[in-house]
Length: 140
Image 1 (cartoon, rainbow, N blue to C red):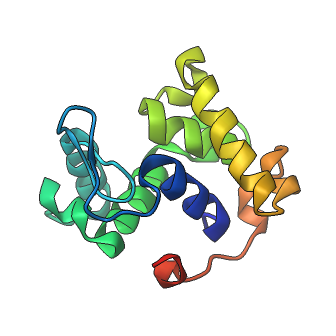
Image 2: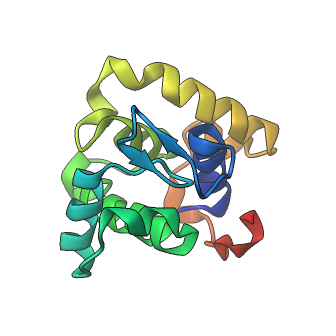
């Protein structure tokens, strides 16, 4: 399960929590700033026919995020345990984002937000699967 505070940190970096946010020159939607290809990819994993506008719904956007991570942020795919850094960088840079130096600055922002939330272990590489998931409704 993806820790609630990690999802919250990414939401705050991406949109400040605004479900109506539009970014990347009109290509990224909602609290998690989801692009159309990400939406389609996540839908294939979840076997749900999401449309890009579904990213404006915070619950659906969160489900898309979790489905995308279930596909790409796995120990089997990475060859090791998955960390919060991997998840943030995959969200920002796509399926190979965890390898791209272009996602380093994004991770630094997410890490700072995690530290602000008191999540020092999570920010410093603690394996994510040791945490409990919490409902996202508390974000709104």
